[in-house]
Amino acid sequence: MQKFYFFLSMIIIVLSLIWLLYFRKNGLEFTLVICAMMIAIVNILTLIWITNKRKKP
Image (cartoon, rainbow, N blue to C red):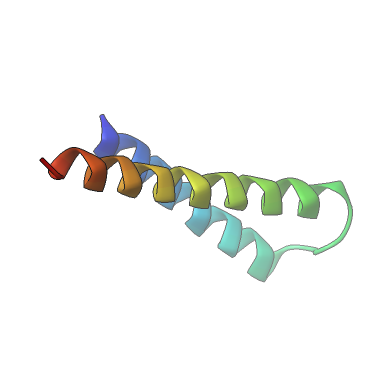
């Protein structure tokens, strides 16, 4: 299940970067894309932290 969420977060980050590169960069859409990217990054960091915490005895 963690791999699914990791993959989903990576897709969100990639789509956000594509949007930032090719579409207009102002207004509410820009704010929502930045927020989605930050949430995806926090999600990936949390998954890495949980995985590392489980590996330790």
